Length: 163
Figure (cartoon, helix red, strand yellow):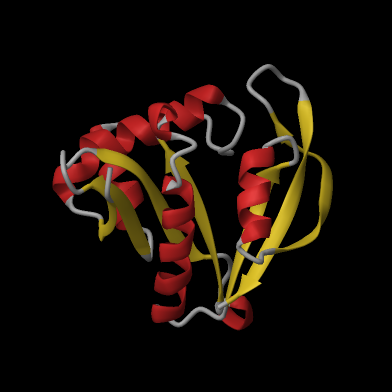
């Protein structure tokens, strides 16, 4: 499988929404609890600074995606934030790494100086290892900062990387 990270196009929306909603349904990574629909999904993705989509060059299947947007505004507007989603059947294949690397490029291209990850669940060791291998620095831990789908609270780790 050869993965290309492409800029989001409307034709990718159904699979993007499906992948995003899979993460929301799992309830262990994204803060959102509401599912995206065709209507609000388009609006959600259109409001991001950049949306990258992992496309299998051979099959043209969508394997994952990321969103990139300002983490704050004004005097902190140079810091961006990203969220990454890989479909469950495609995890462990390096797609997440491709998405993160592309987000670093796009973040810099859009004038951001820092990429900050606000809510990496402490028990999400695969994500944490990936970020640390890519030279993200852990800023600290927010105790009980994430409520899992089952109601249990987990710590979240904050990470950043200069662009």
